[in-house]
Structure formats: C-alpha cells, structure tokens
Length: 244
Ligand code: NAP
Image (cartoon, rainbow, N blue to C red; front, side):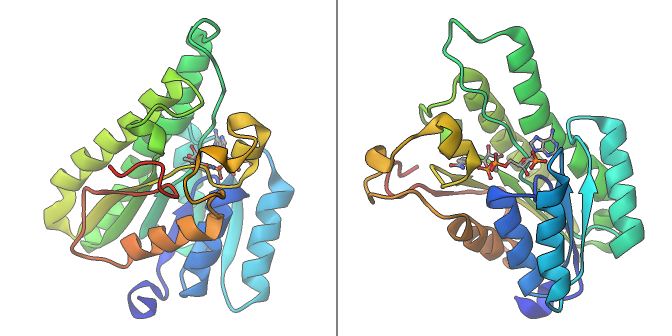
C-alpha cells in the first residue's frame, strides 16, 4: 500500500477532528500529502497539519464550507496549488443535528442534506477531471449505520447517509473503467465530538461493549483506498450492532 499511495495527494473533508483527523494521519503515515479541510475550527486543523509536517509528511489546513460550490472550487484549487492535484478524496465532513420528527424543520433537513450529501457530490465533481485524466483515483464516502438502520439522529440524517451510499454506487458504476474506485465506509458509534455531544451517552447499545475508535475507522478507509478491485461497496463497522 505504501508503494501505491506514497506521493499521492489526498483531500480529507472535515479533517480537523474526529474520524477525519484519524484518516488524515493514516494517509500521511503511508506517504500521501494531505489537505485537511475544516469549516470553523482552524486551530484543530492546524494541529493535525503540524503533527504531519513535524514528522516526515506534508500537509496543509484549508478552510471551506463544503456545502458551498464556490468554496469547494476554491478548496480543490488551493489543495492542487499547495500539494498537487487531488488523487484521493475522502468525503468525511458531516453534521448530526438531533431532531425528533415533530421538531425537524425544513431548514434542518436542507442543511443536513447540503453538508452530508451535496458536499460529496461537489467535491467529487471538482476532483474528477484530474483523476479521469490520469486514470487513477480513490474516493471514499463516510456513510453511517443510519443509512440502513434506525440510528439516533433523525430521518434527515438517515436520508443523507442513504443518499451518500447511492451516490457511491452511481459514481462507482460510471468510473470503474477509468481506474477510479468509489466506496463507502459506514461506522456506528465512534467516540468523537459528534457522539459525545449527544448521539449516545454510553455504549450500552453496542454488543462489543464500547465505542469504536477513530483509528479503527481509518484502518478500514486505508484498506479500501489500498484496494484496486473493490468498488461500489459499503464497508460497515459497528461493534456488532448490525450485520448488513
Ligand atoms: P465530528 O467530530 O463532529 O467532526 C466533524 C468534522 O466535519 C469536523 O472536522 C468539522 O469541521 C467538519 N465539518 C462539519 N461541517 C462542515 C462543513 N460544512 N464544511 C466542512 N467541514 C465541515 O464528527 P465525526 O464523528 O468525526 O464524523 C465524521 C463523519 O463520520 C461524519 O460524516 C459523520 O456523519 C460520520 N459518522 C460518524 C459516526 C460516529 O459515531 N462518530 C457514525 C457514523 C457516521 P470543524 O472542526 O471546523 O467544525
């Protein structure tokens, strides 16, 4: 894997903390240069970039709201100028607004779809010209157990994550002959700010008896990125909560 990924350029959306930060560090470990996107927490993103740059890696922290098409164009251009054109895209940025059916507003629904789903479309479209020209690319979309299961966030979140799995299969089918794989990784209950801030207070629903770690998610992402033959799949990890 190190051979395939060394010198590649990766863009990780929402790489400032949580799952995205662990993926950024894992990619840097095998020699990829990493653009770490964030929305508002610049110091967190800078800290991840610093950790990589203080080792033997190359990283930059880049602000962009990935639900905004102009911001995504600028993000991909900036990553290309500073590190080189993007070969590996990890669509990880996401939000989990916890809402019951009776409280969910149209604005909540639209924002969730824009940040969790439209962003993946915008980022993918922006990196595809380079990937298609070189006939090599890796795209990993971070889904959730909520794409297929009940989840604890709400129907808007379920819809955004089911959508990202449809997007994954659609792009995979169209790009399979061009050396570009598109897969999804669907974690459930990983110990990050998203979970600690309200999705689950304790791991009592998890058969394994604990939350997953961000490193365990990154490990699956690296397996997917290193595999040329697998495309259009969703790989789930949930401590035994679901087997789909
Ligand atoms: P997190 O700790 O809350 O981190 C979210 C990340 O997304 C942060 O880097 C944040 O940037 C970024 N972000 C949010 N909105 C953005 C926007 N509009 N533009 C750019 N970046 C944005 O979340 P996490 O738990 O690591 O989740 C990462 C992904 O995994 C999400 O897609 C989430 O739905 C999915 N997931 C998580 C779990 C879980 O158990 N944790 C389970 C299933 C799926 P700032 O730091 O700048 O705010």
